[in-house]
Length: 112
Image (tube, rainbow, N blue to C red; front, top):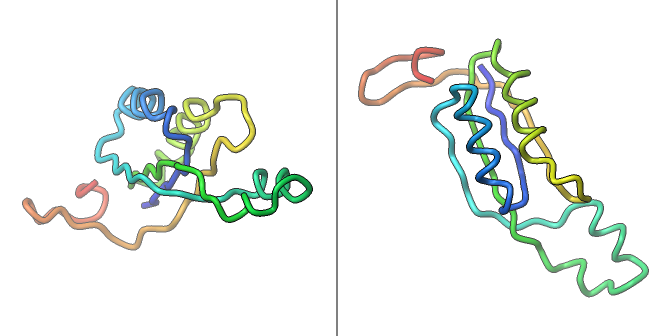
């Protein structure tokens, strides 16, 4: 199992949600976050260094999926999250040791 985390621009949420539900991904967690990416930092070095410490609003979208769904989910996130602009975000993939659905006591892939 894997946890896929995407850090995206907030205005991409509707497209990302539609893409994930379109491939039958359930259990999506969305968190409002702030961040400073590499592109913004590099662009600002010669202009206004004081802006380097001003984080931009982002969304962190997290889903846990069985191993065989990882590439499908990554492709959906990549396509839906891409606004063809700099600083569109990042997709990270983590190993997930186990999962437990509290109500039903299902474990592993069944809990996802």
